Structure formats: structure tokens, C-alpha cells
Image (cartoon, rainbow, N blue to C red; front, side, top):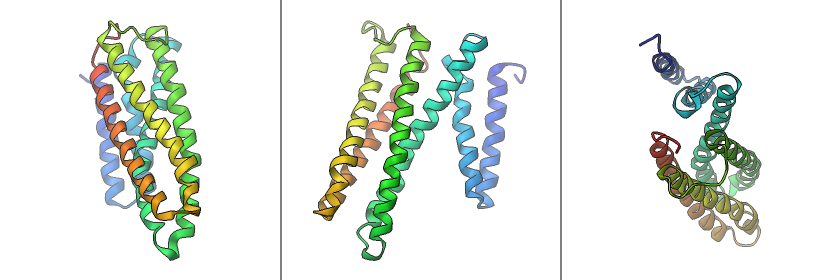
Length: 205
């Protein structure tokens, strides 16, 4: 098993899992973040990205790593974002919380851009085309994932450019809108992950 690509990928994942447990127990949280990123990046060591050889395979795996890391960064950051919303209701913490929300917005722009660009490039690498074939179940589920991510992008834009500025006139309403918007983004993100898990096991035909 250790001589196969699957076995080697499993061994690497097991080693990073152990490293994550150890770093967490030692409260080395920055190290834990790095190790978690490595574990997510290792997902590119299996699946469609491993098909082929040479530069094409390396390009596919690299794009997969960017897609996974940017997508999980976007989705995962929504949890502390909601915590920041709650902190913004505390008078002594409001200024710091609002400043953090603005910085989150900048990071969010980068993550969303990387998700979209790497997703389009991945689709081209797998299919040799961008437009889906609706007679293919793989493409049907891929299109549903794209729609879910598209809705997440729209919500992120509305959150940033409509609800965040609302803090200056109606902070309570802004917090409520951002909370429901963020929860909806998390739901859509989980839907996208579920679809990815499904069509990732199918042949891209």
C-alpha cells in the first residue's frame, strides 16, 4: 500500500493529522493553522487532479490546492466574522470590532477572487471547456455548486457594500442583516462542499 499513490497520500495525511493533534495539545495555534492548511492541500493528492502526468498534472494539483485553501478560508472565516458582529454591540469593543470587519472584507475579496479563478481553471483542466453539458450528471452537480458559490458571492458583496456601511446609521439592523447573510453563506458553502464530495467521486464525462 505504501508503494501506491493512494497509500503515500494516506501516510502523509496521517502524519499531518498527528502533527495537528500535537500542536493543538501544545497550544501552538499558529502551527496548528499551518498544519491544517497542509492537510487541506493534501486533498489535491488524490482524485481527478492526480490523473495524467507531467506539467498538466502539477498544474491541476496546484490549482486544486489554491481552490481548496481559498474556499475553506472563506467559509471558515465566517464563524469568527459572526463573533466580531457580536463584539460590535459592546460599546468598548465597537471600534476595534468594526475595524476588524473591514480587514476581513479585504481578505474576503482575495479569497473569493481565488475561488472563482481557480474554479474556472479547474473546470477547463478537467473538461477542456468551461460551459457545462447538462446531459451529464457530473456537470449538473458541478453547475449546482457553481450556482451555490455564485449566491455566496452575491451575499458577500451585499454584506460588504450594503450592510457594513449601514453601521453608521442603524447598527442594530446592520448586525442582524450581516448575521443572517453570514449564516446563509455558511449554509450555501456546506451545500457546495456536499456537491463537491458527490461529483468528485464521479468520472467527469
